[in-house]
Every structure is written in C-alpha cells, then in structure tokens.
Amino acid sequence: MRKYLLMLASAGMAGEAPAQSSVTVFGGVDLAVTHTRGSGNGATRKTQLASSGNAPSRLGFRGVEDLGGGLSANFWLEAGLDVDTGTGIHSNTNNQASGKGAPGVMSFNRRSTVGLAGRFGEVRLGRDVLPTFMNTGGFEPFGVGGIGANQIFFSSLGGVMSPIPSRISNSVGYFLPPDLGGFYGQVMHAMGENDSTSELPGTGASSRRDGNHTGWRLGYANGSVNVAVASGTTRYANGTLRVTNAGAAYLFGPSLMNLKLVGQLHADSKGVAEGKGMLVGFHLPIGAGEIKGAYSRYRLDPGHAALKPASSKLALGYVHNLSKRTALYATVARVSNSDGASQALMGAVTARNQASTGAECGMRHVF
Image (cartoon, rainbow, N blue to C red; front, side, top):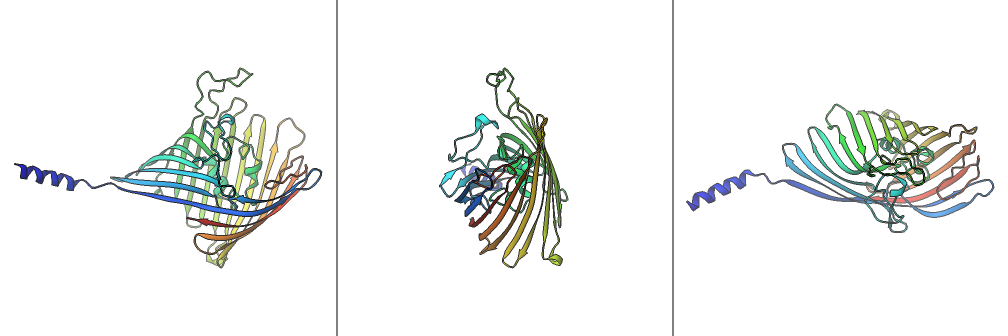
C-alpha cells in the first residue's frame, strides 16, 4: 500500500508545472555639468552638476511570475535619484500639496505597482505614470529632463508646479492587451484618500474629493507611425485640473537617414485659467550618435487678465553612443518670454519678457 501511495504522490507532483518567475534590477546614472543664465534686471546665472540630463537617474526592481494559462503576476518598484548629491526624489502620498514628501528622501516615486496580466490585458495597482504624461514625455526628443526638456512641462498648469506633474498615487489602472493590431490604451482612476468630512482650512469648502483623478489614453503604433491622445481630470476644491494632449511620431526610414519627426498638442485648464501648448521636434541618427532638436511653446490665459504669459524654448543636442549602455551628450537651449512671462532654464533667474540661455555636457549609463 505504501508503495502505491508513493507512486500516486510522485505522479501528482510531476503533473504540477512549477511557476516560472524572474526578478530584474535595472536603472540608470546620468550627470551633466550645466550652465544657465538669465537676462534683464535681477537676472542670475548658475553652474551646477545636474542629474538626468539625457535619461532619468533611477534604481528599480521588477519581477514577473508565470501563473500558467496565459496568466502572470508582476511587480515594479522604481526610485528616482539625484545622483549629484546621492539623495532620492520625493513622492506624493495623496496627490495634493499636503502629501508632498520631504526633498532628498528616498522613495519609489517613479513607479510602485503590482499587477495581474493575461489575454484580457493588465490590471495594475499602485503609484503609476499618468496617461497624459505618457504623451508629454514619449513624443519629445529630450524627454522631460535636462535643459532641452519640453517647455510645456515647465510652464503648464499640469506641469512641474502641480501636485501630480507626471505620476499619481493610489491608482487602479487597466491596460489593453498588446495584440490588437497596433492599438494600445489604458484607463486609470486614482484616489486622494480624504475622509468624508475633509475641508479646506479656513474656508469650509469640502475637500473630500481632492486628489481624485480619472484619466485615459488611446494610441496606434504600426510600422513608421505612432499616434496617441490622452486626457485626465483631477479634482480640487479650488478648481478642477483638466489636461488633454495628443502626440504623433513618424519614422522616414533609410530613405531619409532614419529621420524621426515628433509633435504634440496640449490644452489644460483650472478654474478660469486655461493654457495651450505645442511641440515639434526630430531625431536624426548620425553614425554612432544622434542629433536631436525641438521647439516647444506654452501660453497661459489666466482669465480676466490683460496679459497672457507665453514661453517658448528652442533646443538642440547631440548624443554620442560609446556602447548600448553608455553615451556622452551635449545640449544648448534658449527660452524666450513675452506678455509678462519669466521662465528660465534650470537654476537661473530671468526678468519678465527676457530670455534665458544654457548649455550642458554630460554622461549617462543605463543598466
């Protein structure tokens, strides 16, 4: 009897396919010497060692477990780094000004998710990238780092001055499966996690929905063409933030030296204030390197105001690849302001309606 029991147990164990899993450590280290300067009364200049001029400095861990039947579980933990000081980048716990963490505190601010994927697509929970930000950073030669970065990101209502410029916490998201003939997309809902009696201090206005966000993105990529449109709404008691943008890219291929053109249109609003932006840019491979350039512009209409501040940026850069992982790069940029705007390049101060210029030279290594 014991012999037969052992045989049955062995057969049962052999019939169980062990789950396959993998964990990957990844990241990048990017530093550049940057010099920026403003112009006009009160202008300043600054020379500094800055992180993430060409690619984000980060440290991450991701893993996948094959559950069988086309189903898999995954996790992703990714922290942004200021490599020049060895410190981390803060997160935001509730998608509001009150949830912003202390500068220099290490956190998985770039992404912190767990998900379940299959033929149906993927359901993902945690802190993740905003659907609208995928267009802002994805259809742009310089991304959102360094002095060449998209001016829309630095000037707009939903940009760096907002509580959630690129990522959002407490989110539930769904992603379409990857085998839809080139179509891709996602929907997301995130919570500010305030209780039902929350109020803005000193006003009596309810803030229980502050930090709640709903967003979506839909795109099509096939061959040389990639286009996407996205929209998102974040609730605040002092004005709902709405962002809508569209991005497009076209690769000409060998006939035109693999030239790639990119473009964006952007619109946002909060209360009576509205803004509009645009970007056009290119990537041009040259031997072991790449030339890239972009022109971006953002104009704000504050509402009930005579002036409509506008800032535009012209940037040109070159990246020389020493290997698949390591590159040297250089970028020059100029920001022009009008109608009372005073946007300046990283760390500099410029007067209203004046320009700001800068240059950076750096190195990045990814792993």
